[in-house]
Image 1 (cartoon, one colour):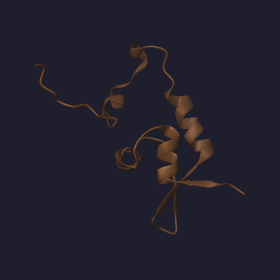
Image 2 (tube, one colour; image 1 turned 90 degrees about the vertical axis):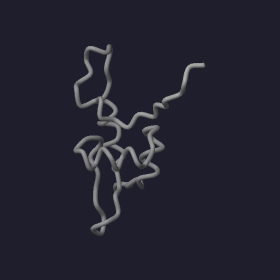
Image 3 (cartoon, helix red, strand yellow; image 1 turned 135 degrees about the vertical axis):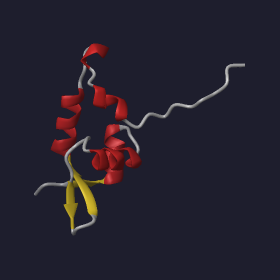
Image 4 (cartoon, helix red, strand yellow; image 1 turned 180 degrees about the vertical axis):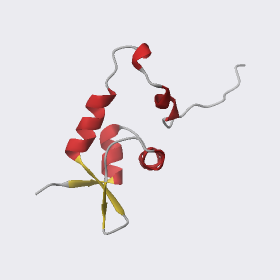
Length: 80
């Protein structure tokens, strides 16, 4: 039997927010997922691991242009 992780569990495992996973799904990126019952989104642990393995980079020149689309938490703070 394959254990499916909820969106929250998958986000916790990857260290991102559930919103980031939703953004990746809508933009066509991120780990593979499963729709259960037409609405519920679930993730297989193996797919999360594969996503991590495929995301490994050794230096910044290995980044692709679509990596810039990830959900970044940057703030525009004034330098006083």
